[in-house]
Image 1 (spheres, rainbow, N blue to C red):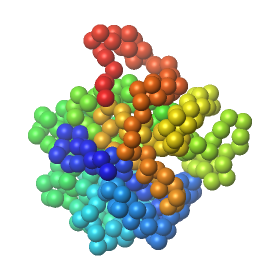
Image 2: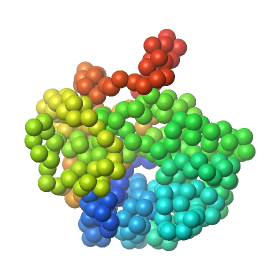
Image 3: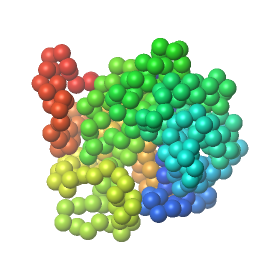
Image 4: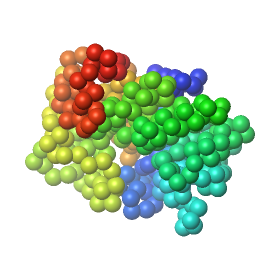
Length: 344
């Protein structure tokens, strides 16, 4: 398994990580992802560790904390072999302070995650979203305290816009606080807006990309085809799950699937393997979070790395997935002489 540095830190992470959104399935939204019980979760963790996939990503809101609990139990007795990444910020309780990134909520969130995971430290703790109501200084000083106490080893954020991330980094630098070294962001062949600002920002500021939903919210599994009904087992069959994820125009989806089919035939790989490989090869990507409903799907996803697409194959996928840019990005793209696209 290839390992890469996580942004500007000295921490090495595997190019593939396992997302635990499929663990538990204890509420309507996460039922669409999967409903792995402890035995299934443990089996998937076993397969990952054997393959060198040592990083596991979770969040407090994944099935209301059940995913973290199952991950902690699955890693019992071998915590030292794994890197645990988890997130908090979204509502986790009914009280007025049970949401956001205030000092009050983050203290409760980190202690709750440690308890559910059955560990005394979190390798990578990320804010699940930006809290515009809490001063950035309060957020970062609280997070810095966790690092100094040894409860958290590295900090990251998720789903930030460019100015959210840059303001946070500037405040951290000005006040000598721990910086974010990771940005967990949606990035796939049917969702490339990440490239317009967040990718060059991450490269410039040495913030590693942790790519989530690289298969476009279950659309690039190879089971969705033009003119055919959705497969019976798909997160897109669950309205709550489908509506809560990225929306993709059918024209774009099927254009990308056609290109993936061609490259899959050329490489002897599957559609999802090609789609995952493409994301892993992009500039600034430290690790790609793969999901799996079961052991079979996980085994297939593990075969998505260890080989390379040709430049012609990458170009074919790039062209099929290209969409019109919004302002100011379409204007900036015309100034390639001084504003080039990031290189691999």
